[in-house]
Length: 182
Image (cartoon, rainbow, N blue to C red; front, side, top):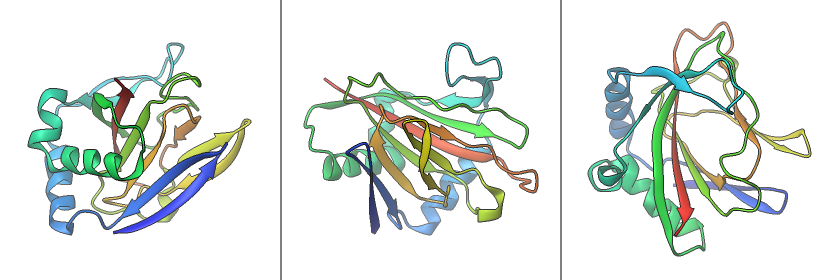
């Protein structure tokens, strides 16, 4: 496991690579490609351009999927808040031409935590698609959607899952796993 820590507005963002065996990364990618996505995910209520997404059953997510178990283990390892409950787990699928906007996963006064998992089996840096993190409306950090990578961050940090470039012929799959204080 390789861990890198970045800080934005005094809050830590953890970037974790090599957490899962390559076989698991490939298996989950293959499962994801066959899921019945629908165009419904919006960055805000005013978003007129939803992207494709699919939600998972949160009662089974942490017990039946290795990704869910791993996300919970990482949350327990890196976040000092003891009582966190999973409230949503879903995968976004986007393509060149889609729209995405800066947003927060919770209000700035909440302590929700988001764990991102990058699902793709391969990703070239020239395809773009970085997750961008902002502070005072300035880009402070860009994280490439490297296959099998986890990112843990406070949901109150403004961010944006950017859209792949026109040379990217693949879907960009990102799983968002969201926790709130009980």
